[in-house]
Image (tube, rainbow, N blue to C red; front, side):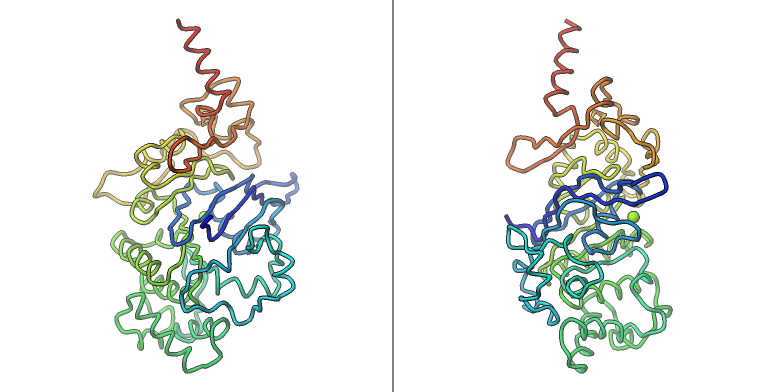
Length: 371
Ligand code: SF4
Ligand code: MG
């Protein structure tokens, strides 16, 4: 299988006074090498928690409580051909976390240990909606990128300095030498976003995780950043996991799509299948919320009937049932649907009773009672 990362049955819990709140409830998906996979869903569905789990930067007191995150380091794309210099192949923690498929199970690494620290940034990098999450206001852009390169790539300061300027040029900065000497506050929002991307890509990560990096930008700048990311993906040969709440962004950038709802993956398919043959009632609702061409791509999903339930309130059966137009009483509110993989050349997966045997039996009974 050609996945850079395979997530299986991942659970993330937050202990609270009311008990353990599950932010992720058995999440499984693959990111194929060299592809852009979009993760979509309303805020609170677990997109960011999924991203943070892959980087082992879940906000405390949250933690991974079950599942595996199988990262294929050996399969990483060429880039400059270098893995992190700080992480030898005989690293004992790395050996202990070795998976059956020859990858490393990230969920078994100590989030604050040296092994995870050298994978994070160098092999899996992340960019955020707010660039100041990654950029330090008191250092110049150039010195921050250099520091990342010195940490993971080379110990030669001159080489690092040159690579930092090259990276700024690669992300389309008009005057990279001058930008390198600037401080973050001297740049516009779009420029800061490019600087953050330059920093994230400076170590040629095999996987880039992007958590709504264009949400705060105007439509024109957003389109520029998205096309820049596609171009860099091909040049560097990396995979991208792109988190967004916008189906417009998905259409512009992604090869495959994962739709999440309340801590679960409810549908996963190629971008064409999601747009032309969506199966899950939630996905269909998301698509109906896309504004007409020519208006904004900043889609708001709140137009779907009802609102996302409070995660403290336990919804029985299918968690979408209080909002679902296809709701089947007696089944959808009692039995959690398993994932059905639909027949066909691709592995289109959907978690809904319209496609389970139980659901089809209910539909059959309806037809018979009407006859
Ligand atoms: Fe709707 Fe039932 Fe499918 Fe859930 S399982 S999405 S409630 S039809
Ligand atoms: Mg988020």
